[in-house]
Image (tube, helix red, strand yellow):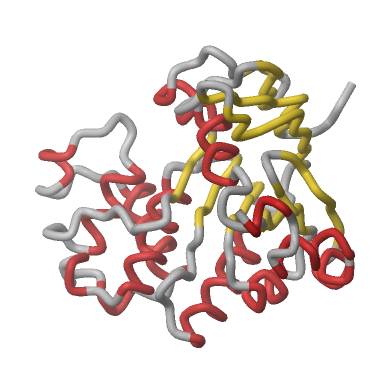
Length: 251
């Protein structure tokens, strides 16, 4: 029996005859940090949509903790332990950093009571811990809308961690970040692996290299190759895809 946390088995997604994904197979182990790269149109967003239930596969199966997710609604998949961070940060800009995190850690979600101090001691400790891991403890009372773009990204990652998912799906977390913020984001994601399984999609190759994780390359909806960053960058197929010399890139 497989010990994988997540398995995508022969996933195909067809949109009116266009194959966004075709016979895609991927496996993630508990606590693993994995990077996924690929040119535009490789199927990266559809790949995440299939895992989270936003898009149903035409063929194949998605298995999470031994349970098939196909046909399961998005909110139930989230409750099973899969959290997703989208490309643009999604935080409550008029609420403070601390209030955003309070909403994330509360179970069940009771927003109005939380804003008047409805957290218990354990939840308050959790909020302070989350602020510390993203270095926002000195901005606890700042409105989230006043944070820099990079700080908003970190706040949303902290909010995701606050929900305690087994699997974190992180989509392009360093787009628009400074070099320093990019390095800090890589360190943050590396620190989260182990306690969580983390899958990162990104275009920034230096950021991917800093993650020091296995890399999966998607192309035309399937896995082109996997390996270390050095291995995939040296692969002639990857070089061809990224130089734009394939038929798809020349269209």
